[in-house]
Image (tube, rainbow, N blue to C red; front, side, top):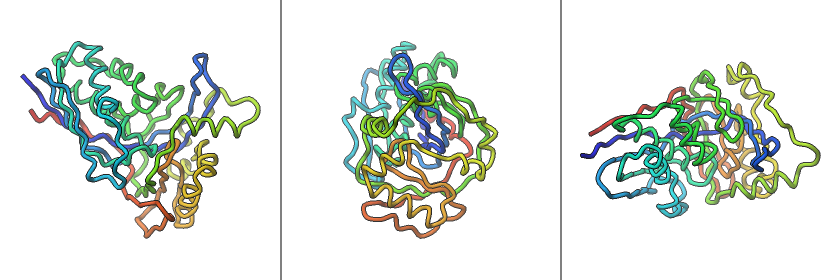
Length: 294
């Protein structure tokens, strides 16, 4: 017997992204503020049978041809992790309609992984707890724990696995500047390391109440990767400056790039420079629930 569920895998931006010192295992710790967007991939999971497959439709993406091999897809890996942890399901068919730009720091692959974990857990004969689901997410990537949860906004520490829920901010218009190239995270970290001297900060310093309004969030907003990524890819710096000139309350790099985002009260005409296409969405104040459809 097979069962099917559908969910929207919502993208994220980081209103704050600080890179701290390395932990004992050699990984950089981070301090970040995650915010979900309305923009999302449509993810349908059919559990049952013996077949295991994933299909991604990229026809709605602003930049095509950047998807990797199916077996490397985080959504597929999430299904494997769930089965290894619970013994169910024996097979699955995952269909994803991609809308989140690929390789731009919006967490598209991580959102798909979180969506698959949530969908499987909603269909499972014996669902696991939210804490167990979060533990599965940790091994899939630093954005996956947040994108597996049901909070629209959260503070994150460590490798993204330590989360503190924040009240959602009022919905605002979000402009995304999308480039036809990605920025490998490893390279972004190398550029950042080369730009720094002295000891790195070790602990978080951000109290959550400083993010209770957009005005306060704007004063706090920053991304440690932005200067070095902007130098390596000048079109990114040009697009950020264009967002600021156009009145964006916050204009910032998404994760380690290459996508940039601007927060606006209303949608405005934008020209972000050569190579950048504009995609409008909104911030989200809630997370779309899983829908069982069979």
